[in-house]
Image 1 (cartoon, helix red, strand yellow):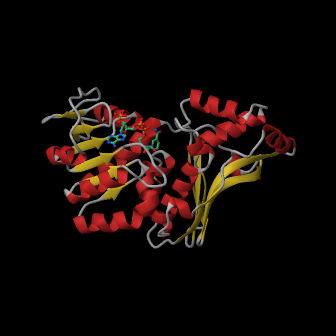
Image 2 (tube, helix red, strand yellow; image 1 turned 30 degrees about the vertical axis):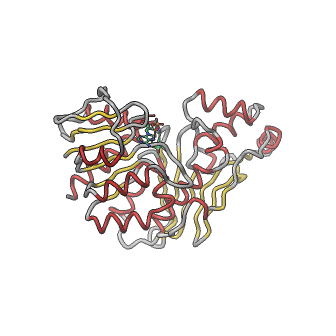
Image 3 (spheres, protein in one colour; image 1 turned 180 degrees about the vertical axis):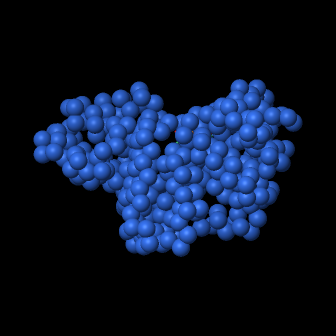
Length: 316
Ligand SMILES: NC(=O)c1ccc[n+]([C@@H]2O[C@H](COP(=O)([O-])OP(=O)(O)OC[C@H]3O[C@@H](n4cnc5c(N)ncnc54)[C@H](OP(=O)(O)O)[C@@H]3O)[C@@H](O)[C@H]2O)c1
């Protein structure tokens, strides 16, 4: 099966390393890679984890026409409000009859119902396991293992940067010092406002609500509150009362929110640290089910992409 990658940053490179490690059992071939500034690479046989890039394709159309891939893997930078440029890339791949896998939550957050319909019309698969929990099998678990179940809502702690910043405030550091710590740990986005202002959590809330609850919403429909207004004094005052504050993603009925909530230190929502994340799914037939991923990194995100490719290979 021929794979074409659009975007070859942290996730793309980790995915290429994973394919190399699992090559004998899963002989997928990356034959084309396109980036924004590093150029484009093609190979008739296969590109390894350290490909040599040539001049950039003049456009994504030119790239996709030459790549003629079975699966296009979209791994470009996130825009939570518009879903671009990934949204356009995904549509161009569908037009060419390619299946699509993405780790980019933007398109799922802003255009999921339309993309599902377009994929169905094109007779291709559209998968996105890594968009919300760094590769933990949320969507595949629901799709494959919960037949007949209606998802009534969910509760998630899905953003690492805010957890680290609140932890730093609890130690008396300022918001900016907490952000600097998260950036030094390689967790925060280059533009930390994306995490601090709640955009990342709101986009994940919209993506989960769209897929799990058929909500047909966008990031803008999620009631979003960031943690920019919190102070070390407030967080330390809570700690003295055995409490903390957590940025929680919630969906219940037609209410969707992402914002800071006060919880007891002993609460399940307060119990996960660092990059770890947690999702509780509230259902009609199975009560509340949970998933926790402990300290996931880019390798787990790459694994989510890999699991989607394997699932597509099984399906077609
Ligand atoms: N990192 C994680 O742990 C993680 C976890 C879950 C989800 N995600 C999502 O996965 C996606 C990729 O993340 P990442 O960490 O790999 O990002 P990254 O390191 O910033 O890499 C982004 C890649 O996209 C390319 N790119 C950007 N705009 C492009 C365009 N218009 N056309 C072609 N290529 C373009 C960049 O090209 P250049 O190399 O030339 O700049 C780069 O190779 C993002 O949507 C992110 O939100 C990441």
